[in-house]
Length: 257
Picture 1 (tube, helix red, strand yellow):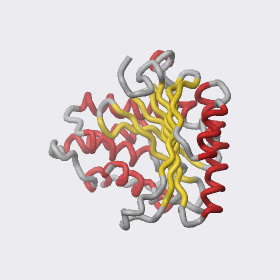
Picture 2 (cartoon, one colour):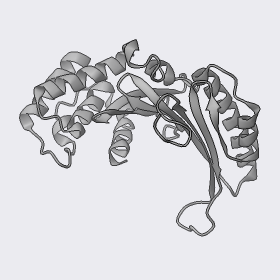
Picture 3 (cartoon, helix red, strand yellow):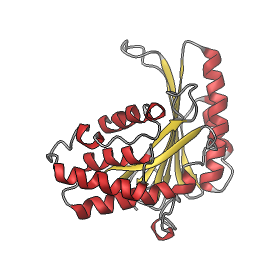
Picture 4 (spheres, rainbow, N blue to C red):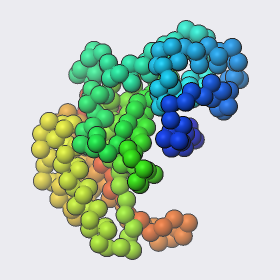
């Protein structure tokens, strides 16, 4: 979570950075907790990132940060790491990595149908697990998140989550969120699973009840949670949570097949 918060904070500064290259960025970033920073490797990574990604104002600094957190200890590890992120930026994921094993990462980024509103990228802050970062296009509501997050391994998305919340003290906002979440869930299921969502799922969203089942290629779970009246540390919110897991890797109850 610390890494993701750091990356999101960093991304928020991109419009102010413009295309200017910050050559000192790597040395200013916090290092891996268990592996000390190596100035020579930092310098090598910065040069290779610039050579491969150019002066890209988003991807260059982002990959530099990820390399630092990954704790790469050799130039070969850095080369592999940068190459995989270049593949992610270009959307050139080998089909062999996801066919029959999960969703195509390039398509999964936009199953929610909000490409005009958000930009997203896959990053690998730790070996073996890729996650999604997003940033809102345009200055308005730049901090508002979509709640949509595909995740998986390099070249293959195996989990898709969609989360929203509303203030319980404002019934009209809860009602509006219920309708919006139902519409987006319908779009997401159609795009990710290739079939229309069953009435049972849409009814569960509308009535704020749980749904667990298999839809097309995915195990699907929807949960609705009300606020905890005993917890005075957080606002009284209600949350909508939809999770799709590629069914060849996990069953609905979370056990391996």
